[in-house]
Amino acid sequence: MKKFLQKFMFTFVFMSTAVCLLCTGCSRQPEEYRSTGTAMGTIISQTVYVSAGEEAARKITEEVTSCIDGLEQDCLSWRLEDSEIYRINLSAGSGQQEALSGFLEEVLEQCKKVYAASDGAFDFTIGNVARLWNIDSWAGMQFSGSAVTGGQQSAAAEKSGLEFTLPTQEQLAAVLSCVGADKCSIEAGFISLPEGMQLDLGAVGKGIALDEIRKLLAQHSEVTGAVISVGGSILTYGSKPDGSMWKVGIVDPFDTAQSLGTLSLPGGFCVSTSGDYERYVEVDGVRYHHILDPHTGMPADSDVKSVTIVCREDSQTAAGGLFSDALSTACFVLGMERGMELAEAFGAEVLFVDKEGVISMTEGMEQYFSASRQ
Ligand code: AMP
Ligand code: MG
Image (cartoon, rainbow, N blue to C red):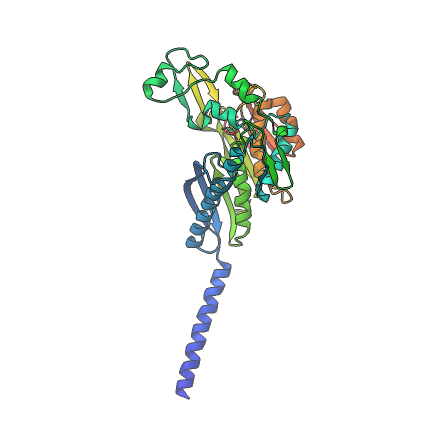
């Protein structure tokens, strides 16, 4: 009898402890966890609120990073031989139809919408023009010394060992004849690129990553909120434990160490910015930046210094990130007036900083934005 009682007591104490532990787990307050890393050749900053402890939070941030890496390696990269874009680019001019994954077909369909609505200001077939400018090798490089005209290399560049050659008008004309998303056929899971055409999803890659991250976070009920930056493109997700809005800073394009202002957003939004300060080369005091006008092949010369787009993560298309990223590039090329119309056509909010530093925005943006200086 004594033995039975001992056994009963032990089982009772064990079970109560287990139930208590479980309950504590259920009612655990979400805790903040931060991480910074790199993926897709850019910096990934994450702040996540997770109700299952630090170890679970760490695992989630790792999953986010490998999701971005996977996206780049398997699909979006034009450099990596195992990616879908690389394989498709290789087939250009072969006359063959290349198989498209359902994922990439969907992405290209959304991109075509922005291409059409922007009259080609956003064009994902711009690959060979971007290669000619060698954009991916720039990181705010400055060249000075001898005047550099098309086809020549600056003395400073030669001295420093860095190679940069401005494309000639002839070279640009040759590659431009192969640009135009309407010239590539996408149909029933297949794509065919004409000779000389190369796809480049650089203008939407970070936004697509935000859309994938949102899907991933939605699979983790223990994540109650997050704000995640993929190289400056930002996703807000869920809510903060204190119920306050997510704060997203906008860089001052005239002084990138400073903030122009802050957006206060609920969860479920994507923010993308395109600016001439992000990537450029300077040759003899002239700045050549990375946002190209697909009609001229030259860096876009609009009235815009930087443009920020805010898109709601639409659960139907699940492409708020793709749209915010594509639209920021398109609006930079189109300039303020036409850009404003384009953004509104997609139900997006937009904030422009022009070359004089004047800020203009849609009415909807006014409710989110507060300037650092009045
Ligand atoms: P973003 O910084 O999002 O505006 O994207 C710029 C990147 O997209 C560049 O580095 C190019 O690879 C590519 N790109 C440049 N101009 C365009 C354009 N007009 N349409 C589509 N992609 C572009
Ligand atoms: Mg973009």
